[in-house]
Image (cartoon, rainbow, N blue to C red; front, side, top):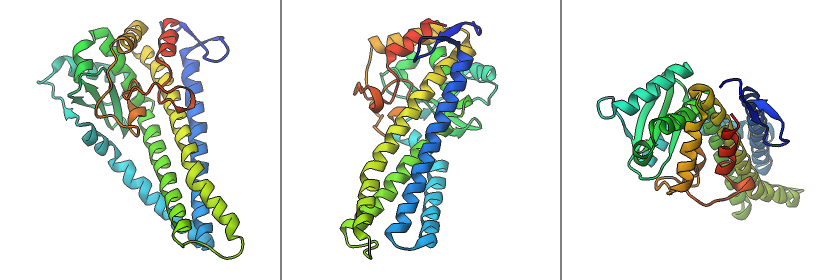
Length: 303
């Protein structure tokens, strides 16, 4: 199974899923590099706004670093709390617990903590900052309505997010997008409430601030969604590598498609972290949090 080809999404050529993994990693790194550039622009505009030169840039950088560190180290705990997920012990659900442990061994990573959401929808997500500090969350509906092969496919997908460090990628992108929006908000409030630089060239500076405050967060959000879509393809490919049984994951996606329910605890901010679109807005293209479910199914049929 590991040598079976899969089609390239763009030109119809057939490549192995190892090639797909490499391509998705490369694309995600490029997208995060672009987000880093946007953060640099946000800090630079902050310095210009308050006419403080390198001191202003240093202040902006300190704010960015503190914001990033705080979000990075408490983000997973905040997400678990917001989702209402509760820990699952081996005694409470040995079947699911053993499945997670077995896939962790296959992925050669520490077994993540296991949580469950009391929700009838068919969904799951992984969170954390690295394999040593990670968790997998499944909904009650997923645990009860999927057969073993389907459940193994979904858990393998989430395990892949952990093993591929997708959880770190997505946490970083969420932090960066939030930081860009935060800096933009400071600049926007400064412009409209009398702060900021008003010496020569103030008109151009105001225009720069408006562009940053309004357009840059939108661009950053689009990049975040692009990262999310790339990592979903990567996790699908890696899950097949773990289970050697693409039909399990494919059938799980079909069941989710045919018995769709939104996940109540999901929000626009957290939607990109889930296995399948948890909100049901059915957005496509640049504004979609996930690749089209039909496309994911078709790709898995080619393994």
